[in-house]
Image 1 (cartoon, rainbow, N blue to C red):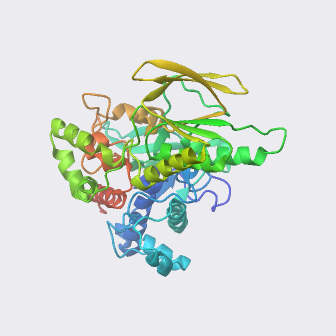
Image 2 (cartoon, rainbow, N blue to C red):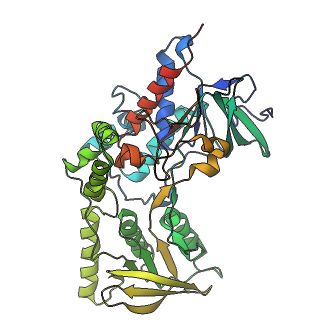
Image 3 (cartoon, helix red, strand yellow):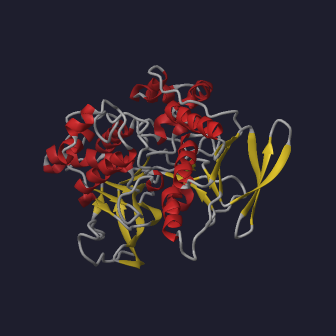
Amino acid sequence: MWHAKGGDAAVNPLPSEPDTIYDILGIGFGPSNLALAIAIDEHNASAPAEGRIRAGFLERQQGFGWHRGMLIDDATMQVSFLKDLVTMRNPTSDFSFLCYLREQGRLVDFLNAKTLFPLRIEFHDYFAWAAARVGHLVEYAAEVLAVEPVTDQDGTVRWFDVLSRDPAAPDRTLVRRARNICVAVGLEPHLPPGAVRSDRVWHTSELLPRVAELAAAAGSDRAVPVRRVFVLGAGQSAAEAVDYLHRSFPEAEVCGVFAKYGYTPADDSPFANRIFDPEAVDLYFHAPPAVKQSLDDYHRSTNYSVVDLELIESLYATMYREKVQGRERLRMLNVSRIREVDDRGGQLDVTVEFLPTGEREVLSADLLVYATGYRPQELGPLLGEAAKLCVHEDGEAVRVGRDHRVELTTAAEAGLYLQGGTEHTHGLSSTLLSTTAVRAGEILDSVLARAPRPV
């Protein structure tokens, strides 16, 4: 049933009347769908009226946000600023990072810094700047509840009805009809089996706000003493968390725990980085399964469970300096795993196993941070009935075309596009920023090619 939107148009800018049909409706508004919104906005600005497409995006957050919990003040991007939201698709776009710098009055200052890798907080601000410019296409605080396929008289799926909460009245539901939907809901934090979050057990995705809470409570009756912290993981987020916690709690012992002998440097050499080129997506997509697997195995060191060499060297220098000074606060429990965590309310008892000997030791801790990565969100709970239309590969992954359009089980004119969760078909770059701009253009081209022609 259709409901009137109500509220201020600035709060709820996307029409939901029954006679409004969107050419594409995006679910989620992180960098991927933001890049698509920009591509659509630029297309509509230059296309004749009959060639423009109606688009909208629904985001459950109150405003734009991207990995806020890890926006450490001195952390830098691991991808070149030229792989921003637009440049690889349209180098002349005024949505580029360089245009953002010019508007902020920092273009010359950035050039003088002689770097390809901006601060992470700066790139987040760039995303927010771009998101504000296409704010007319997005509705925030609009959690999507379900997606329902809509068929015509001959049983063909012509549209999808997207049900979401009304930001002006969260107990009400809005329904919008679209010829295509594009799902880009990002990744969700992954925890080891049996791990339970609490005030003392975190995932790195909540690192900064959690540390801020402890700092705010310092000196009060709510203060939590921090004498020992464990960080489980061996990737970039783990190393950054170890470094940040070591600086944030100058009296605490900070222990990195990982099964490796030491952190592995990320392979960001020029030839290895070609695995993230747009052309590499074509090669990967059309390659036999065995070749895809070998490419994954060869090049996982470009992104997974690896750390920037500069950070590795900085952490080692800190450890050595503390050893010289006789007060070792930074420890690496290598070739080890956490086998058990007993949360006693006031403290944690953490059982750590040294893998070569099997010896186990129970150590008390005040905090445990899981730097155990992320995984794609399952489509079923989000898409509801529409998820049943998706064709699956031999495993559980959905079958996706080169244009990022999911193959459906029944005759359908409506389209379901995915941004992210397609490593099995499009390679390592599917969850990264490297091909975001190009992918947005490919999805727009696919939607335009399938758009109904005016009579």
